[in-house]
Image (cartoon, rainbow, N blue to C red):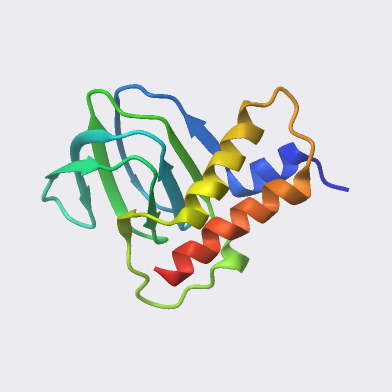
Length: 142
């Protein structure tokens, strides 16, 4: 039987605090992000051209596997992020990245995951996985 930590590690689930950040990477796996708070900064996706961004609170983002990402914010905002196991999101050619998607289902799932991650000892693996799948379902609908 798997533990909540096994599920969290399989999906590389992280809750990032509000803080300044600067990242640059190529996504080894598709990833999903959820902004709990507003953020401002500059970013680029599969390009050297950086553009200013403003992320709305309670919004969902998706980055496909292989996408080059740079992002920087002086303040950041609380952000949930996780990678999708390859077997759950087969490579369908050109998957489109997006951000700023608002969905009541995504908001509900993200807040449940946040609560589980803030818990000293998350136990309910089925509930955690159900919320991860709920967010994946929203991504597939966008």
